[in-house]
Image (cartoon, rainbow, N blue to C red):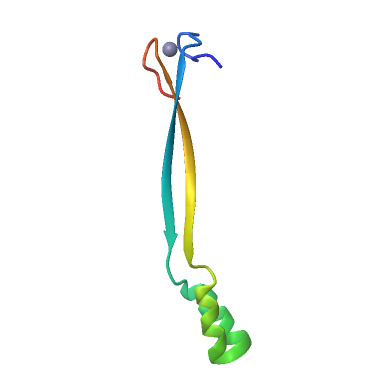
Length: 67
Ligand SMILES: [Zn+2]
């Protein structure tokens, strides 16, 4: 892999990790309610939880360009 700016192959990879959280979603709850009644409201909990995301970024050691 080379830098798109200066064509240097001296690249550092930075890994950025973050967590994405989701809360109770009323959309799912209402759908569940229509289909199954009050018990269906619990369906709103289906979409909850957290997701781990990973993002990679490359930094050129030559010119500092991030891509
Ligand atoms: Zn560069």
